[in-house]
Image 1 (cartoon, rainbow, N blue to C red):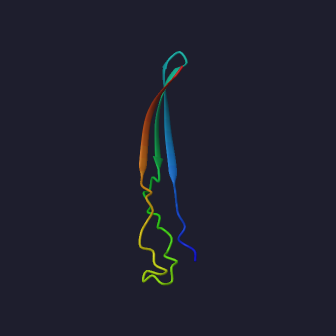
Image 2: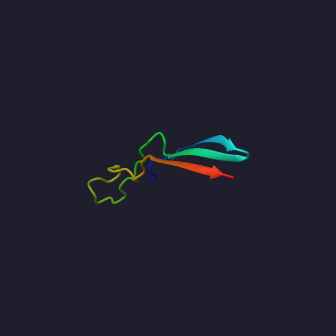
Image 3: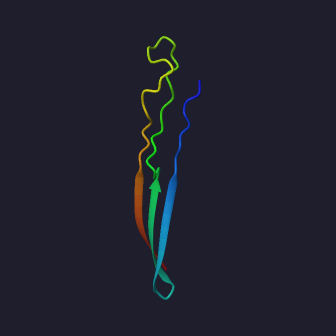
Length: 73
């Protein structure tokens, strides 16, 4: 028995801002699972269970956002 496919879309954005003679500040924004798509768990495979073949939960994937500031010299 096959379960549903899972989707994990990540995106990263960078912006470099020159500060002084070859020195740069970089702003970074990274998003994991950015469309916040729910991924369903596998169906129950126990034939004696009343929920056999049904998907009753989803995995713990959630949207995570990470912001950072880098100083390059």
